[in-house]
Image (cartoon, rainbow, N blue to C red; front, side, top):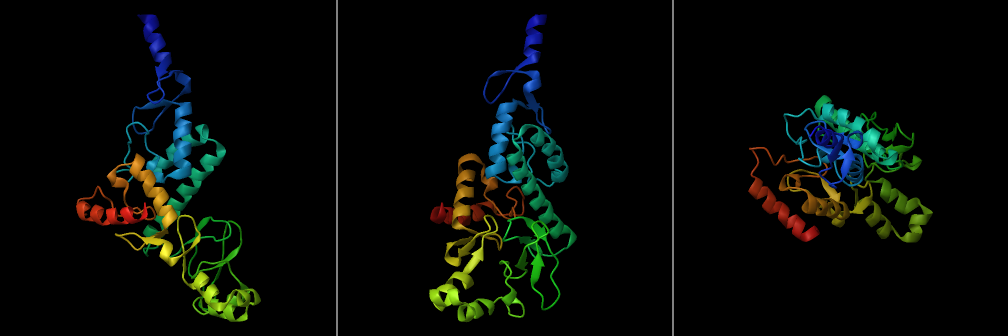
Length: 277
């Protein structure tokens, strides 16, 4: 009996792959008593780092904690969980997690500290793709520099900065280019204006997307491109619960809250899914 108990203690069964794993090769989750083997931990959270949001960095067995709940200190949890990820994930996947965590902190700081709409001072660099916060520049100067790559972009239209933009509004600059740029004259003014004035930047993939290929969320002002919408919510439909069918950009609405008519929201959202996914 003593040998059997010792064997059971030192060789535990992984609940995911059902292999007998030596205790030193098991990973115990932070918020619950669940344990999985290092290989299953690495495979699952590498996939989450590449394809899902911070809200999915909970236990892969019991799904605790609910990172959308208000009674969980998300910052403290993710700080501790990052230690596990750094030990067990490949460096590339860990860096993806760090980027998601950085973007989350930036968004939270903008919302809570500046007390202005969440995306007002939040920017994606069109050159390197990194996120940063920048205060509105002085009047008449729209150029801002990315703190990561030091490349310049326009604070308002969020495009790569061109010196000719100085002193010309974002609305008038595409027209100016159409009239004065030799390459654009060869393309034709109509084609250039359609390309530049009818495009929006997708906040997920940072691509400039024609306005007809953007999807506006039903509960907020966020818009994403059809490809990002389809990729995200196809994954949610296969692997997640109804509570994750909120906005992939701002996380609203909180479908666990009591002040939201969940039935009405999901009815509206199903129309988007039916058309797009």
